[in-house]
Length: 258
Ligand code: CAA
Image 1 (cartoon, rainbow, N blue to C red):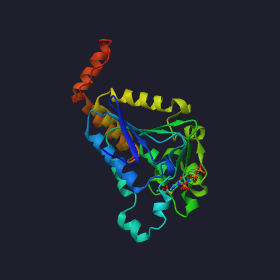
Image 2: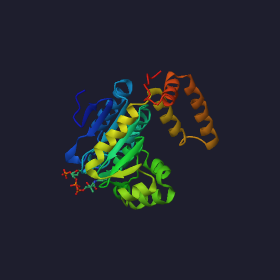
Image 3: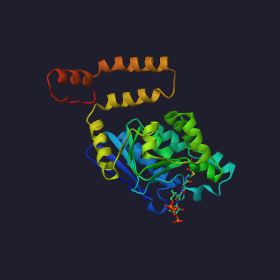
Image 4: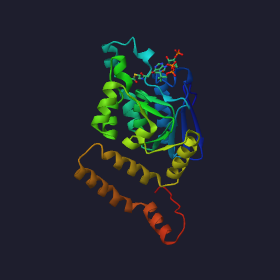
């Protein structure tokens, strides 16, 4: 695929997407978001790719939605385009795991894009924030909702209302990122985590992702019931038989995605 704003490569069974609009600190314009969604959907259909890593540059994961592109829009324009609905909905619908590897700025839509991924590994240089209030708007790709679920009301409210950024250490303490690593090790760590996921059974990985995400959509009792139904269903797969047999035989499991 020929992209202008992202670079898509593969390393083994891991797909790596690098946001590549350096002059605008990877600001998310419509063209970039279109390319990103198209690539993610292509890899979701292509089982030679089993896990995806999304990253930016050392300076910026992404400094937000493209302010210059949004500035002239009217209410009618945003409503009729259903601005950002497509990115939110289509990225949320990807069934393979997506790891965000974040260094530098992850602001506004950049922070929201990282939160749309399944987990975030942050470089010690990462800075997260929702500064939209300074532009006379608020987060518009799910930030008010996802940030609140990640870090709780008090911190999310403070960040959305004041525009204050969090550094990587605070983001880890608050539960926004799974872990912080030295900037020089970010890509190696993210690719290692993705390679580990890529070794697992594809259907079991997809069911696990769907089940963890269910925690955000339902009550505890319903979520646990959903987990139990899929947990039981896993015993109908060849990969459960293989995984448990391999443990007993003290060897590595050879999953066949069945
Ligand atoms: N949109 C468009 N262009 C952007 C941009 C954005 N979100 N962020 C940075 N750029 C551009 C700058 O305009 C600048 O371009 P020029 O060289 O042509 O002037 C270039 O990227 C480099 O930026 P700076 O010179 O500002 O770099 P800096 O190191 O001095 O500052 C920064 C870095 C603090 C991240 C600063 O660029 C900044 O504050 N950016 C905007 C952050 C922001 O407000 N994000 C929220 C956007 S709104 C949104 O995302 C809505 C939503 O929820 C969907």
